[in-house]
Length: 102
Image (cartoon, rainbow, N blue to C red; front, side, top):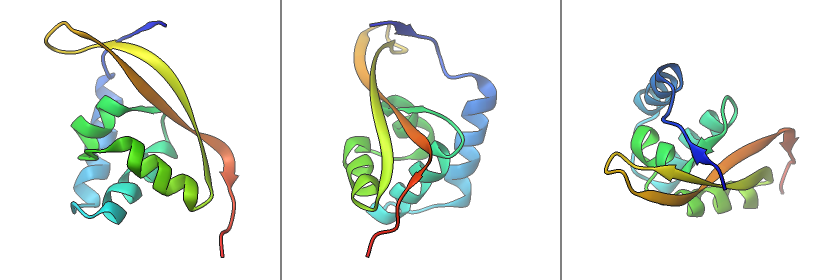
């Protein structure tokens, strides 16, 4: 496992802009924000919580997978602001990888 560095300022700003444009706490709203972010970046569980207001990222990823989006999970160790190490998922939307569902 590798230690992940902090979110770059430009990525953080882009994620916060997505959150500002797509407000709401409903599962669908959270999934929409996450999918939009995944279209641009690989996103960790922490980034989804902090910058996208997605509070149960694995559930939203499962929701998106059930819709046909191919999302890969890579495991990383990140260090929080408190200096603690945590193992978190890094989610990656496979390029051009969504299929239509009935």
